[in-house]
Amino acid sequence: MIDIVNQLSAIHRQVSREPSDSGEIVTVLLRRDYGAPIDDVWHAVTDPERLRRWFLPISGDLRVGGTFQLEGNAGGEILTCEPPRLLRVTFGAPTSLVELRLSATDEDDTALELVHTVPVDLAGGGAGALYVGPGWDGALLALDLFVRGEISDDPVAAANSPQGQEFSRGSVHAWIDVVTASGTASPEEITAATEVSLAQFAPDVAAADRQD
Image 1 (tube, one colour):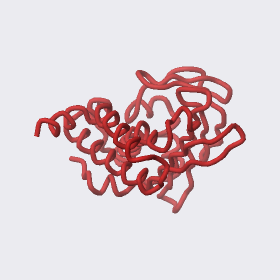
Image 2 (image 1 turned 60 degrees about the vertical axis):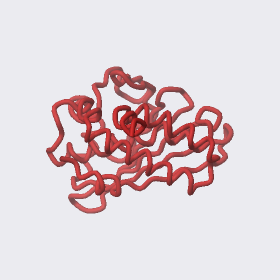
Image 3 (image 1 turned 90 degrees about the horizontal axis):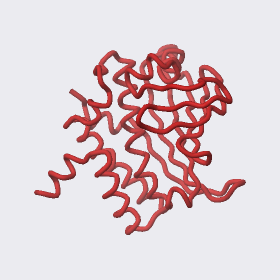
């Protein structure tokens, strides 16, 4: 069983809009701690055999300058790989960038930051965080279960299970609060993005809520 409340509260979330050399971008930042050494966490997020056990199967030319494809999900180019601290890739589009930053907080503890930046025109404002944030929340949850030896045999099925969708619904509402507090989107934009996000990440529980 997932401790949904504690797993949701373990993740720090942040949304911002800021200028860049190529124009305004929306930045989504997630941070959480793991009770595992930095080398172990690094290998969990970069080794294909381990990655498929908690996230998704990956294929491609897995080196700097090469490309990757996550099964049933996004692909991109590997821009930077500096073990065991930094991985930077494009994700789904050349202007959509994901950066993983790892730091050892103790001999057996690691802090992970995930930063996803997208041009504001592509993100549709800060409410665009609702399209990606809950998915990243689910990935950070699955990584925690994996490094603690509690991952299921099928991470996709686990995410789509009733309990997985309850976590995702809580995640969507956590991101609503963050986006609202950030002032990066209007109430109308947040409402529209919420409907899409719930339908994507928690379709069954969202449908049950509508019936109630």
